Each structure stands twice: as C-alpha cells, then as structure tokens.
Length: 243
Image (tube, rainbow, N blue to C red; front, side):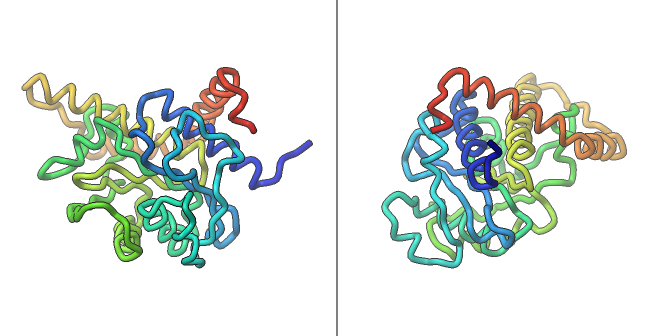
C-alpha cells in the first residue's frame, strides 16, 4: 500500500533525526528538523521538544501551522524551534525541508571572526559562494523577530552558517538536505584538520571550485541514495522508527 505524502515525510524526517544521532552530530535533546506538508509550506512537520533524536518515531512528528501563533503555546513545541522553523515555513514556501544543528566542526568554523569555508577539496568546494553567513548572534533564537531575521539572511542560498551558533540547511528534499548537512560537517572537519597542521592551505582556483560546486548540484540522486542507505540501516537497527 502506498504511503501518503505526510506519512512518507514522517518516516523520512524520523530517519534523518536518528541518522544524525547515530553519527554523533546531535546536541543533547536540542536542535530541530522540519518538512513542509502543504503546497504553501505553512503546514509542516517538526520533531517534538526535548526528545532525543535516537528515539524519535514517525508518529512523534508534530503537525504545525506556521500561521497559527497558538502553536507556540503547545508544551511539546520548543520555543526556539517554533521561532526559526515557523518563520522559515511561513515566509519561504520554496523551503520544503529545514535542518538546524550545532555539529562540532561546522560550529567551530561558525565561531571564527570571519566564518567562511575555503574550497580546499571537493567537499568544501560544494559550498563555494553558496552559503549565507550570520554574524549577529544575540543569544537564544526564541522570538519570531529573530526567526524572521534569520530567514531573510538565506536570500538565494539554501544554507546559513550561523555565527557563534551552528548551521541551517534547507532544501526541497529530505535526502538532499541530510547529505548536504553531512557533507558540510565533513568539509569543516577536513578544514579544521588542515588548519591544525599549521601549513598554508592550497585553496582551489575559483573556476575549479565553481565547477565542483556545480557538479555536486548535478547529482541529487547521489544525495538521496546516501540518505536511503542510511535510512535502511536505521530501520534494521530499530524498526520502531516506523511506528
């Protein structure tokens, strides 16, 4: 029997959360992923407040309405998650998926005076001229005004490096978003390791970095398959994901 869009999104969102926990990219019981259900993007699914990523099931996903401010009062809705994801889905209908994390290496890059990811290999080159940067961290993002500000910073990009905070990756597809945030963390790990040698970086020429970024954009099926493989691993490991 085929699944409805919402049913499939619930499974894929739960799987993406469990994969992130499996890879150690989560932060305690914080951080949130969301996926739009309605055509206008305003009806969206999001993981519940303070439930560990590794235990999330498909049925746990909250169905929220970005236009309904009363959602913020629900005890299972995290205030910062509502502020960020609610504003994203209210203002940017093309954003179907949003993943916000504080992974160690990406966040380390975000704490630099000049947060940027120079293109030194094919992973880092994926982000060449394709990432917005926020340098105005003012504490917990728990107001709609802050969520609106962050949404506005994305502009034509799908990623936001959040200075002194973490990262937001958006996409039209859960599989692509997962692979994107995985590659970003790996890219930052490679970058930190390279910087730690104290040797000068061999930064790719702009034309090579641009070509590599475009090559990444031409293979979304690679990203989707990466996600599908990891999803199956999670299901085999614990079928309760599907509950």
